[in-house]
Amino acid sequence: MTGTGPDPDDTELGCWIDPDTQMTECMVEGAFGAGPAPELMGLMMAGTLITSLYIAGDGTTSVPAIVTILLGAVMVPVLPAQYVGFAYTVVVMGIVVALFAVWTRFTHQGGF
Image (cartoon, rainbow, N blue to C red; front, side):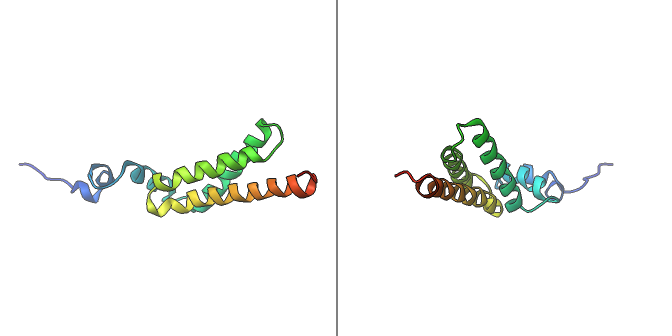
């Protein structure tokens, strides 16, 4: 007597077995399934990245802004479509820090 058991497509393994899905989609969906929104995670990651690069650098905000913008731009095509907001949040945080760097350079410090 042989049993067939459950269909693999109806289980958690279905995402990993299906050749049409991407590996990142299976991993990222589990991480964000019961947790906070991807945009909030992007905000936290970008804030941590900017702060750590600011502390490790020479006190200028230019390097953290550029690295954050480039990292977010690289993440846009890598992440699945439902998590692209995560990458766009990182890019927006980098742009805000870049605008702050420009404001500091040209108005606060008075140098051209």
